[in-house]
Length: 483
Ligand code: GDG
Image (tube, rainbow, N blue to C red; front, side):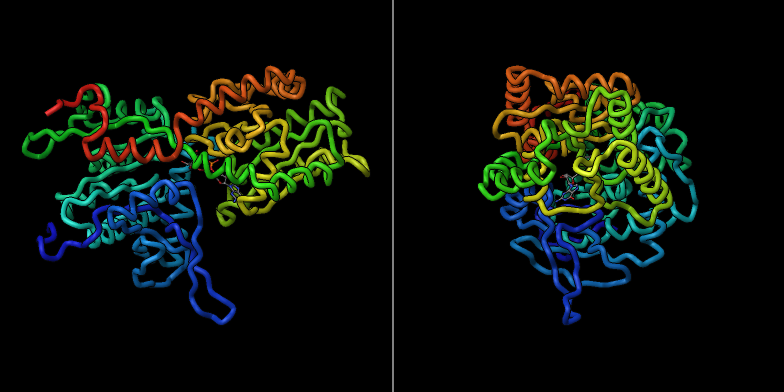
């Protein structure tokens, strides 16, 4: 039942994401505390959220806890609660062990369990209801990511008056892979409840519209999908690319701080002032191609093309999804590989790989980017990869080389990087050597071009162009009638 005019919520702009922009913590006194997690999404949406009386619906990260909505820094926080079983089935299960591997080219095998699907439906319903409860009449509701693909349709049923956007942060797979999903039609129906469905790459939007044509026979014209309703009425859904970015100015400001610059110098000297520092920064995830990178580096050391006295690889592998079995196995594999390479090639004074299974504060991340000469992004499949963009933003001295996988969305924009296929180990090795040996003039020319490109599309551009399309203020995509 649609809500009646007098019992709608009061928020004109509602963001719905799996996690809230604040983390729940228990203080030493046992009392609840909230800590803001300053992600790119929050930074991008903060100004719009404040001016439009925004509410953010999401999970607080705590199990079996009910929290009342509260205001944080001008944004209404609306916590959705999850039970321990739901965290296991909806989040670790269906989101991270079914959809995540399926949407990333089945690099790991997706697990299909009907009870996980049931939990996914139930939790998506709860998120949709929470959004329906707080959205004002005609509000804009922007749903984020693969954990919540059913929310657009469920919300439309509850609140046909609101304008609904959905952004998929991860790739959308080709039909041959997507069609393996037993609930493929329900997922598409869920997404088609939105007015605008956004993707990282043109290829992702194409995969989505192809799946819609194959499974529903709907006509698509350019970015417009003609969704046919039960009475034969047609509703237009826009499906197109909105490549996400980072808070470029914020990152530049961080990298320019004297204490961050001093810390970068300190890192270099702590590593023994090698000629070249190579850096990898990833969540410890099988999509990131960490093993491929280590293999290439290990072979270069084995052949004597590189020597530990000259080159150090710093690999930050931040802990991720540690209760999912595939991630536990991955950690064992990577740590075995690191141990072997270090055992074989490190000396008392020079370690081949500085491997760090930690999460770091943003300042330390910026110092690491600054300290690095060569950044290695070797993802096997990645929606965008913000790390590549952060390295470019942090390179305020216009020096540094980015080695970037063609399978990361960032490769569509950052074309002046050394673009690699991480499966081609010989090609990757050549790219690493080329990066290390690149003359300064070429490094600077490429980095200046990368920085220009990055400035053309910051996270503010991303959110503005998505919201403008959603509210009809953006350029009319091909195929959408202008009336
Ligand atoms: C998904 C998509 C898409 C990492 N370790 C630490 C830390 N990080 C930060 C990085 C970066 C972010 O986490 C990771 O973003 P990525 O884009 O690289 O990758 P995913 O986490 O897989 O993100 C991806 C993204 O969504 C956005 O749409 O680009 O394709 O998979 O910002 O710096 N930050 C801190 N400490 C760490 O140890 N502070």
